[in-house]
Image 1: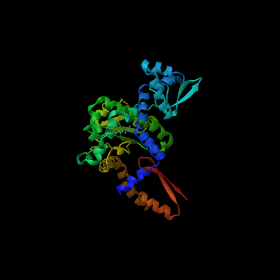
Image 2: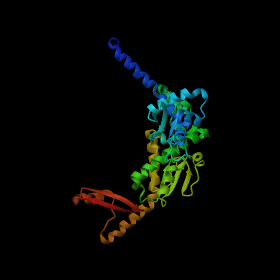
Image 3: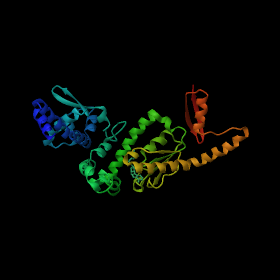
Image 4: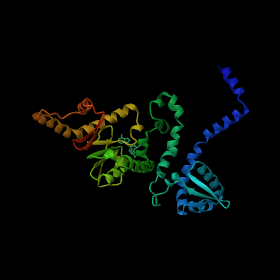
Length: 346
Ligand SMILES: C[S@@+](CC[C@H](N)C(=O)[O-])C[C@H]1O[C@@H](n2cnc3c(N)ncnc32)[C@H](O)[C@@H]1O
């Protein structure tokens, strides 16, 4: 077997060998694109282009970002990688390169610069030494008994992601600011595409809701929904105050306040299977607690309806009736409290 492998390697053509080496180096250096993106974000190159009327030469950029005079040619090289990645576009104006924004770099404009959305903080969440360093522990995590029992982050840093945030306020601010940006963009898309999911809801709890960006977007669009944000006490303590949102500092494994709906954004993907089940159990309790009043009313109504020999039915009982009557499908649309509309399709 070993001999076969050696023979195969020996018969690799010169072209293949060269190509394989290029491909390998390409993979090795893929991180340069991320690092260049992070540098462009920190140097605020998108702002520089925007403030220069939407197009900037290298000299314009240098002036705006406060470039050290010895680094002009290095900035050109950085911009070459960034245009290759589609972060900027380059035009040749009479032999001089002029850079413009793309839809990606428009997302990197700073607060205060006219923009619809900003995602520069989330770039810092993804591309930062703490996050990247974790990936260097993959080998240990895959192979060492003790390491395999904890998260990759713990192997690299000796604490969980949430413990580091609790103990390092700079790291915590960076992380939460990034999540606020992500939530603003996500909620804009969700409210444009699927705002129906929030109709008919009286109360909602955003579990692990951080600084409350999701809840803020929900109450802006649906002011009648009573929104609660649950997160760890030191996180909610730093959340910007909002009279329309109630913040609760608690451990999501211990307690989730009652609500019609529990919202989990970017939560379950942080946890292993068993922890997800524990979280979902807490969510079920929270919804059931809110439901208890409605459920009781439903039961009373059910007995009341006996006077006409009627019944308050569960979904599977309605389904049986509709299908038996020859309808092909149905949809239950909650309206308010215990009331729903049932659409039945022929
Ligand atoms: C990936 S962030 C998601 C934040 C927010 N849902 C969003 O999408 O912007 C995970 C959140 O879970 C919170 N968290 C982690 N462990 C928690 C716990 N045991 N109890 C409550 N919140 C927790 C963190 O503080 C953080 O805000």
